[in-house]
Length: 322
Image (tube, rainbow, N blue to C red; front, side):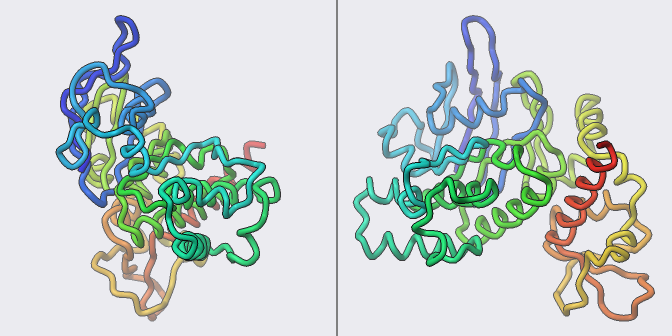
């Protein structure tokens, strides 16, 4: 779908991205992560030519991006920023329809699209479509930013640390919304973050960068179980809070982060296993069955349960520090 072939980006003589080669699959939720200055945002912006590469090729469906008409390329790529970048003088509906209007969609198609997208993030169209952006909370504005990127039905969505300025609870809820949207609309998502928890929760695969180079690419399971080098090991140690080494699955059960609904589960974990083990399993499975619980009923933990638990823990940790 998106192929990088020996891509470099240089400013004067300094390379901020070097020898970057990988293939992002169609329909994949692909995460770029790394410390500040690692080149992840530059890499993202080269896909839609907000930043031009210095050397190498980026191809979309085997076609070099330099061969696309720039407007055609960007119409086919949704873009979500941390700063949201909505137009405050416009209504929610007007913000969502910017690209569909430029593409001359019919009035009926645009109205149906607004309703579909607002409903997909649990925002009542009758309540929200005619509101101005200034009337919305930060989380509501970011939801509009996400669905605006989907409005013209692009094949690719780029997301540059879209939730980093939000509080943990709002961030957690938006992560769940984005997962649901990606599963519903089957888009290829390239997502930049500096948060390893977020990368594990969202990514089908993760690319860990440092100084403009790829350190390791793989699933969360592969990276957590087999870090490629010392840099990856140290990044994981600092990126995953220490409490996860002490917390076990039973803590989620105690906090009611589970369900007794008869949901099919392809993976099983014990109540005595660590939360890290649960994270690894849920990076590959939507649902995990919990065995050895004192409760005789079937107990399952979903990705949403885990996200809720991690958000609660992060909030509690911040409150304790304050």
